[in-house]
Amino acid sequence: MPILDVENLSVSFKQYATGLKQVHHQVISNLSISLEAGEILAVVGASGSGKSLLAHAILGILPSNARTSGTIKYAGEILTSKRQKALRGKEIAIVPQSVNFLDPLMRVGKQVRTSVKSGDAAALQREVFGRFHLKKEVETMYPFQLSGGMARRVLLSTAMVSGAKVIIADEPTPGLDPVVIKEALNNIREFADNGCAVLFITHDIESALKIADKIAVFYAGTTVEIAPVENFKGQGEALRHPYTKALWRALPQNDFIPIPGSQPHPTELPTGCLFAPRCPLATSECQEVLPDMRFLRNGMVRCIHAN
Image (cartoon, rainbow, N blue to C red; front, top):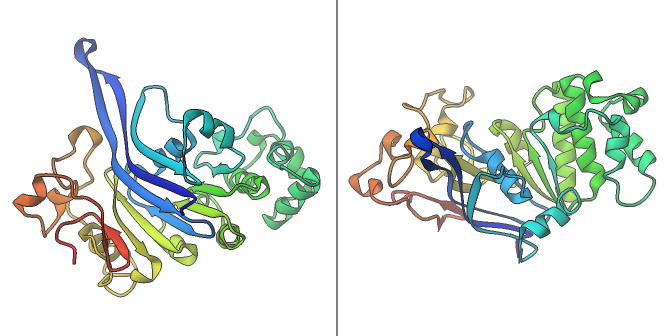
């Protein structure tokens, strides 16, 4: 049984248009992923594809004007708002994208210690700071005294000492130097090797390939493919969805071929397949309905032409 299971999640935001008319903008549509203990699932996609919103939906921290549908289960039970609040920061922890999540009025060492559930909190905090090359004096600093890279290492430290069973790492490495990035990735892999389930949200496919077991590719607010990392090789022959293949071939170390067009804005989503306007395989059938995710060659894909 997956420890975390998201099925057909949709998220829209209520806004007011001209004349105080209410409109709902769909930003996530029928998104599905599952995560098992000891596994790293990397989530990749362009900005605005729904990666961070998925994390916020799992944690129950979407803004008040958000409307959701679908189901999110943790350990086989539906995550209600009450259960999300009880588990947040305890069994489900996040390494947030923004360093603004740090309390500006609390010294960072104390902040990290508050996440320790058992054992000597000060000793654990100092041990993990040492692993991230944060000097002893850093623990007495306030967030405004830290560089961006130091603040990210403090956030990683908080997750490491929490003992959580599910870690959501939302872009945890920007601003870090290559040596610390390598160590941070190794520590995230260590989370999983010790039985923790990790949702690793990133723009960097190369980083994902170094530590992940599977990669979920997002486009315009939905999952288009979930594939084992070993499929990302060569010219992308083992991949399934046209967008995933194009994304892989657009990387500088591959063919560096740009994808024509751009990801649609949530207010201008096409009917049917969301990638159809940019897809060389698109037919009139693709414009009729959003394809379902289906199992194909040990992976999942949302495309009627994938084979």
